[in-house]
Image 1: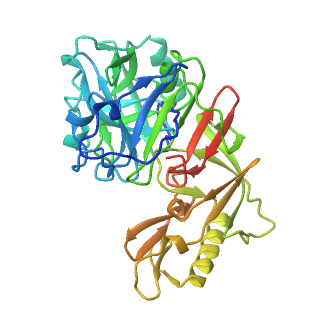
Image 2: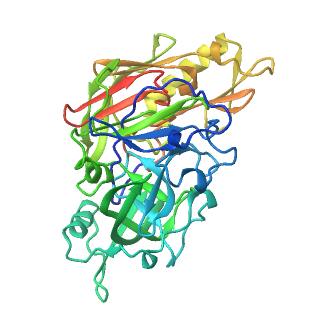
Image 3: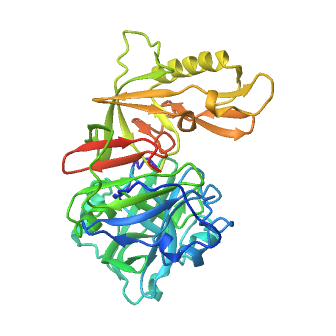
Amino acid sequence: MELILGVMMLLALSYYMVGPCNCSGVCSPATYKLRLSNAGAFHFPVFHREHPCLDPSPVHASSVSDAGTVIGNDKIHQGKYFMAINLGTPAVFNLVTIDTGSTLSWVSCERCQIKCHQQAYEAGPKFNPQSSTTYRQIGCSNEDCINIHQDNGIPYGCIDETDTCLYSVRYGSQYSAGNLGRDRLTLGDITVVDDFLFGCSMDDVFYGSEAGVIGFGNKSYSFFNQMARQTSYNAFAYCFPSDHQAEGFLIIGPYPQRLELVTPLIRGYGLRSYVYSLLLLDMTVDGKRLEVDPSIDTRQIMVVDSGTDDTFVSSPTFYALAEAVTSAMRDKGYYREYGSEKVCFRPDGGEPVNWRGLPWMEMQFLRATVKLPPENVFHQQSVDRICLAFQPDTSGVRDVRILGNKALRSFRVVYDLQKMTFGFQARAC
């Protein structure tokens, strides 16, 4: 999710390679457990929504509320991955979106003041700060309140009568607003942060049904920085599985150093000092470079955003990409559908899509060329229809290019904030 105006927060992750699920029948409770490694890193399992170790229904609080599990569930929010957290005393279970493109974490709270999104039963109940014995509000003169207002251009946000700091975050046409507070954060059966800073949302326009957002952005009040103080290494990584049989992980702290490809990590972009960016130099389709007007500089800064599904590139790059993919698909017996916003294809004979015969793509970053398999390039709309998971940056809402989570699914990606590098490893989950 691209945070355009609001407070943000960074959830840092890291992951260890695992083999395919060998689940048969009921999975062990240990399958879902958050654990602390000998190296001092927090490990979380990551599951596709159809993983056999999960209940066949979308997500049940009873199966993950004690777990710190991370799950993909399109019924709650298309193309997102969620983390199970517990807030307060007694602890309240919530599923929240993992978002590297924002910083301030927030959950939907009881006593909605204006308008609030409908929260799915599977995402847990709305948090009620008055029911938590460990909740405390943030005062108007508090340093965190002042920093959050300054970071997001909020001239003033306070209820003077109760000395309550207010926040407001915006994600394009979506937003969340409410009170800033602190409470106990528990992941699995481990109390990770006693005074976790987050937003208690009482007014929002939000298109998902999850409880809220856990941010990853680079600010002192981010989730990552609150967690990183308890680890020995300033890094996070993750692997979001696309195969329902696969299991991924996210780890906060030290990570396995073996990586296939490494590119420089750029801290911030323009006025967005909190985001993490990469330099994209070029792209190819089936080994052929895109045909872009030579007078146009195709190099572009890409913000890595786990909360956005598709990848957004510059318009000249996109239209050249669409033509290259159309040509490659035509050679493989597919025709392009015109008249829709997305670039979509169907087999000429009406048969199911043959994924093994689809074109592959390369994204050439500085000192690292990443090969994307067809599963990372296309969305499957039906058995005989697929659409490109890339879009042009022409919405008017975005003024930066976005590397979305679809392109990097099943990759281990590592944000090393000590070395300032971003690492890739294919087929990792």
